[in-house]
Image (cartoon, rainbow, N blue to C red):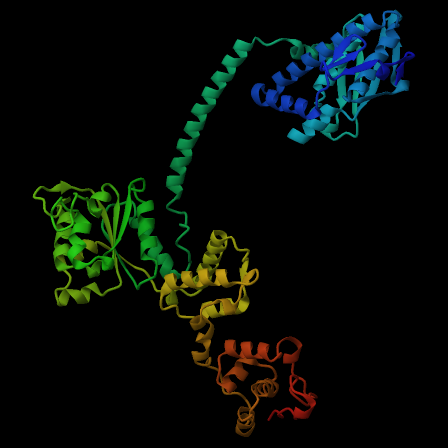
Length: 586
């Protein structure tokens, strides 16, 4: 690389022992582009776009001016034109950019006060780093290069110059393009860049930033309060994650829960085991004014009768054998919150009496104590029992029943929720796939049919357990029929055939089909006789349509094979020796 007859690279000296790089006597430093990119990010993140641009332009200007003065000392006999060449040459030597002038657009005649240079910065490190860190920009970003060119050209020409980047790779241009001229000839550009060369008073900048941060913090807190208010307002319309379904009976129960949630009235949830009563109780709590306070759930059927009162109301030290310390009960634990009493029908009459007092008077007494304690608790109770029937034999207190059933919500069994079975199955598939880290993306059609047909005596709890099992056992990316529990897979065998009109075949042909020993041939014969009508074929064969579909798949009768072929002489799956004429339609 020779400039004005001088080979600049040959003048570089690397003294590794001393940690020095010199261009003759002028010390230089080698920096990585990534480090300069990191500085750019730090400045922009800390000072903002405009101030960071000013700092980097002033940094470049100082470097260009220093290089220009050093080169004047190193090469005192060089002309102005030669010094104008040194700056671009140093850019290339330092790996900053390759400067390529556009000759037809350049006029350099300092003696007559003329300077106009148009050139490209090829491979600008600044544009490269900016794209890497921030992506595309709406304005040029080669700030250090522009500052350097301004400082060096001003030093070489002995007069203030201006450098304007017209195009930039960060804007999408193929190359970065810039113009250099005297400030007197480019007054608008010179005025526009003045703010970038005005030094900031650091304490003032820091104070401004501090004030801005305080204002942003106040704005953020105000926004958070608004968001919380909107969330509270919208929560009554938002479907809770653990309550999935859109069947009429389920929607009716959810609408009732949404209506009564904001008030403190007691609620009685009635429904079979596993229908999701606890989930509905949690929804009542989450939508109430007590949502920030405890939600305590207790399964009364799991409490031995001798420990029911101690668990519910607490006990004093020494109240019974083993009571080495005093303990609070669930009523105290749920103070200001919600207490969910599941299977309340399994409580003893004595415990029922004390619960009634807690509801009516708002006070409880620990076992072994004489003093009363105030409690503020909203009670939601649930049972699968017939409490009204229990009133007649006095196994459940009538006054407590009416106190608990201020609001009664009937939670429907899963068998009465229609399409909800599939919605819940999909919900549980997603949950367990995520929880177990399994790539199970869907439920196969045959499995969906079985889920929809099964009556689910264990309700939502049974379906949840079945889907967890299926996700664990799935050998590929979908839940298949064989992944479901055996009772779900085989339940269609016990299904009564769908009601349909009598198959239009003669009794003789019907008997002939039913007497066919091979099951595959029997199914094929029925389909041929009934022109492929699966409903009527299933009815003729005495099986459900789902079972017929499974058998057809087993014997290879799906797809093309199911089409009626009057010229066919045998069942597709049989050998030549088993050939037989298809039954003729009567």
